[in-house]
Image 1: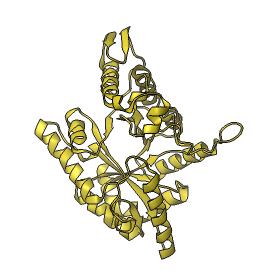
Image 2: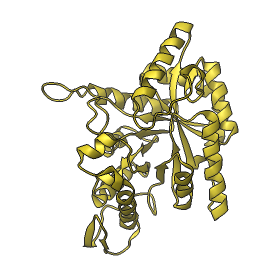
Image 3: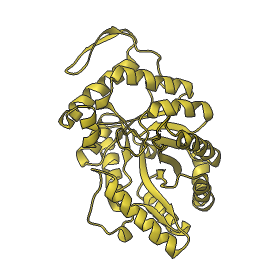
Image 4: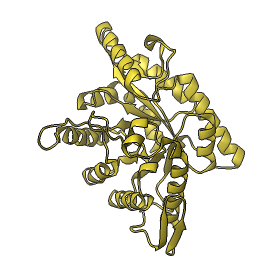
Length: 326
């Protein structure tokens, strides 16, 4: 099993300069995660929330590239419809170069209506904008000669995109997907698969199987490390802590936006890694039995203490798996 982190820093808004403590604390958190054996960190991208979520994930990853040596640096995801694809290709390649080839490039088309409204981009155009942008980025990273592009949204004439990424032909591409068709698309188009934190275990394993089967159907080599599953982490040691964790989980589900899915009481929801260390180990073992080998932890506390507790009390149960993978 491989364990990583999913999410990112949060800052507070102030009358003067923005509060940078959230960023500094998060950087220390990632540095400690690397020391403890966590394999990756995937950063989100959000805008206009008022909650201080990361908006410039590639910028933060560039700084983390200088502070770390081995941990993989991922985006989850860069929302392509909002960006000039050539500028994104340049920025992402720079992170890959500075990190010595550690970038994991996750992309998506976005889902929050408020963000599209803030950028004055119709959400109905998300898919076509995404498709054109990723085509430009792939071309930018693989063309040996100057290239041109004349599309519906973007036009470039005889350009060379620099620098080239360290990983060739380009960093691994990840697609956040949940519907059967989007999962099949990820397999067909050469993406790795990012699965969300809300899917119950049985649903998650169905998605893993669908991606694996589609890879095999089209003749694409399949490896378990082509899938990463986000899971909320809430380690508890008493009944009072369990009730508080369930209340936090309910609040997250109410506020997570358009990804939220109703119908299952939070106490019966087996998606999060919520419980005692033994209970969490049991849930991870169910995921592993279904083919999941990479779990990205969404920790609402995001403290070094919680990182260490998970490493000492849960990751240790999978030590033989980690050694075999190295």
